[in-house]
Amino acid sequence: MNHTTSRELRISVRGLETGMFVSRLDRPWIETRFPLQGLLIASQSDIDELRGVCSYVYVDIDAGRSPDTRWIEFDDAAAKVKVDAQQEFLALRRAEWTLQSEFEVELKHAAEAHAEVPGGKQDVVHFSRSDFWKAFWRLNRPRR
Image (tube, rainbow, N blue to C red; front, side, top):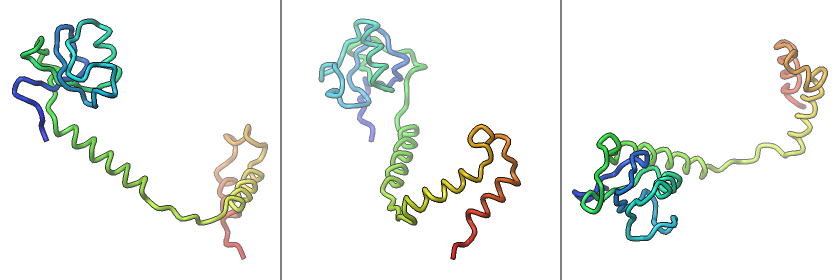
């Protein structure tokens, strides 16, 4: 959904300059130190702070300076990709994992595997593939 008015442009924070009027942020105003009704950029520190908290902002070209056209961003395409990625991540977080073995059992297997490595940590690099597979199959053979 596009909330921009005809006199409001979405721009990257990399394109901010003094004299621009920021009418909206990519996050709620309450999450920043800035006033809720917008901000006329007066200094480099305002720009630096906006860059620290936002990826993009909306500037009102009637209330302040117009941005360089190379910094104008168009909504939807990038936002959709980001939303899809966030939804996928949330779906993964909701996955239910079942416990397949107890920690103590896994710890015992890990100790056995560690004991199979000759010379400890220092020699792991020199541990041959055949030695690795021998140890792997010995540890993963069916238990009776």
